[in-house]
Every structure is written in structure tokens, then in C-alpha cells.
Image (tube, rainbow, N blue to C red; front, side):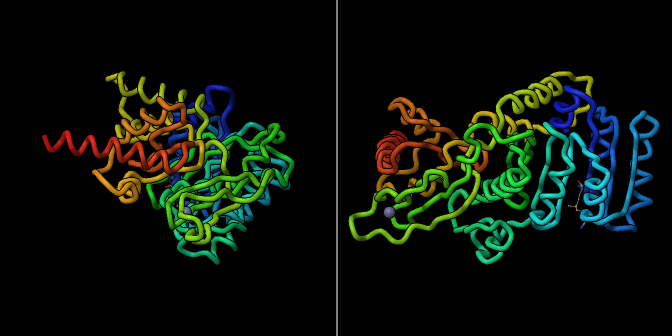
Amino acid sequence: MLLARALASTGPLRLLDVMAGCGIRGLRVGLEAGATAVWANDADPDRLPLLSANLAPLSAAGCALRTTALTAQQLLAGCLQRRERFELVDLDAFGCPTALLPLALEAVSLDGVLYLASSDGRSPTGHDRPAAVRRFGAAARAHPASWELALRLQLGSVARCAWALGRGVEPLLAFSEGRTFRTAVRLRRRPARGEEGQLGLIALCHGCGDQQVQSLLSLRQWQPCACAPGTAPPLAISGPLWIGPLQHPPTLEAVLRQAEAEAEAEAVPRSVAAASRRLLAALHADPGLPARCWPLAEIARRMGRGGPPKLTALVEALRRLGHGAWASGVMAGQLRSDAPWPLILELAARLGGAGAADAAK
Ligand SMILES: C[S@@+](CC[C@H](N)C(=O)[O-])C[C@H]1O[C@@H](n2cnc3c(N)ncnc32)[C@H](O)[C@@H]1O
Ligand SMILES: [Zn+2]
């Protein structure tokens, strides 16, 4: 809803809610974000009377309303035929919506946003590798930052579809609670310079835990990992997937500002829960780059001595040495860093060991 409001602040907002369920999103985008038009659709015809009744307040509020019971395929094909486009297309699917992506992107106006959800958690997290090949055209291997991998596979699919249509993409938001994977992507008239370099591969060594990232544009040999020579198992390689930024800082700033203003204005009914504000703040504090993340528990397991360090202390120590380091906004308790893996483990051992010694005093 905050994103819809941010979009509405720059011009008229028309929403196409492709899988509307009971219509709650259309109702809120109409009433709270001031959309000028809402089209709420759900394939289940039994929902149509409920949709119409739930959304009736929109007409009274001056928002043009349409409700239909078409399949997403029929709805989007019709939009393409009529060349109808929307500033916000919401595709909140059961399962994986890849098959609908080309038509859904055709329904997004230039500089408009596709807000995508997938409840398929198995294939993008390495638990169903054949399905990942079918749905994403990609390898998905078990990985400690599994939610992030799923979001990156989803963004990779959106980018490839958009590029095939001659368009560019700009991810605005990407987040998950582990069951549903949600991304909001702005559609650009054409790809930005170097945008194709954001599609790549992520390699993980299950032997030492090291991770490497490569762009498909400049693919070469993988570097030796931290395993002793001759002992490294084959790398587990995932992708092609999106290796670029996951969040768009100006968009997050805009939605955070709104959320905080609403929290401070006592008179306004609170529509942004404290947990949502915390999530937005965590996403804002994490650029989502590079695509190398490790859980603290794994760092502790691999560093050999002492308890796990505090994430903030590890981030600060890595930054003091000139490396990029952040707490992941996507998965709690994970470190994101571009630092060499052996250095991360060495610093963690020093900090964890010191922390454990302090605690024992
Ligand atoms: C995850 S729910 C949507 C929930 C809704 N966005 C909300 O916030 O309450 C998915 C909906 O998609 C509908 N659906 C399933 N397959 C569809 C299809 N092919 N085309 C259109 N709607 C479909 C289902 O009837 C269901 O209501
Ligand atoms: Zn290794």
C-alpha cells in the first residue's frame, strides 16, 4: 500500500489486480492510495458477487471500478489486444507465476510497476531441481541464503522476459517471510547501460562455505575456494539469476518516510504494523549487494572456536578493513559481504572468541 501511495504521488495510478481474491488490495489502493481506476479480477466466478460488494465503496469515492472473473491468461491477453496498460499490475499467484510474466509485463505501462508474488518455495530453494529448470530455466541448489536465492531467481525471470520484449527493469523491493517471495519491479522503456551484466551465477562450496558470484557477460573460470588443494567438492552453482541490487533506495526512503509519518501521527489509524516498519528499515539498510550472504550460525560452525560474534561487530570490523559488509535485510541473522571468506572467518573467530571470553568474566 505504501508503494502504491508512492506511485500515486507521481501521477494517476491505475491498478490491475490480476488475482484479486476478495479484492482487499484493490479496495485499499483505491481508498488509501487514491488510485483513479481499479480492475479487480479473479478466475473463480463464485467470488464475483463478493468482489463487487467489497469494492462498491470505490465507485462512491470516484475511482473507476471493474470486476471480472477471467483467467489471468484471458484477462492479460485482452489487455494486450486492446493495448491497455496500468501503472501497477499486481500478480499475487498461488504457485509460480513465470508462465504469466510476458503477458503481465505487456500490461505494465512504461515506468509502471509489476508487483509479483510466488508461493512456490520448493523449486527456487533447491528442493525441486527439475521444477526450477522448468519454471526458471535455471539451476537452483541448496544455499544458506535460500530466500534471497528464490528472490534472485524470480527477478532473473522478470528481467529476461522484459529484455526479450526490449524493455529494462529496475527492482524496487524484494522480500520474503520464507513462504511467499515478493518482488516489485519497475519496467523501463529500455535496459539501462550494463543492465545485462546483472544476470549471473552464484557458486557455493559445501566443503569450506566460500561463495563466488559471476556475471554471464564476463563468465570465466571459478577461483580456487578456501578448501585445501585437491579436497574441494564440485561447486554448487545456481542460476542464471539476478545478481544486481534487490532494493531501490529512493523508493524505500519514500515508503519508510510515509510509514514513519503515519506512526507518529496519532490521529491516523495505523495501517503500517511495527513489524512492517522494521522490515522496511532492514531492507533500507541493506543494498542487497553483493549476492554473498552467510548465516551467523554457519560462520560460527566453520570458524572452529568461540561463540558466534555479534553481527554488528563483525560488520563494523569488516568495514574498518575497507570491505563492504551489511546485515542482510532479506534474512535475519545473516552477513552480506564482499570480503574474502577466510578473513570473515578469522575476524568472526576473534570477535566471537572475545565475546565468549567477556561473557565468561
Ligand atoms: C494468493 S490468492 C490472491 C489473494 C489476494 N491478492 C489478497 O491479497 O487477498 C490467489 C487468487 O488467484 C485466483 N486464481 C488462481 N488461478 C488463477 C488464474 N489462472 N487466473 C486468475 N485468478 C486465479 C484464486 O482464485 C485466488 O483467489
Ligand atoms: Zn571450498
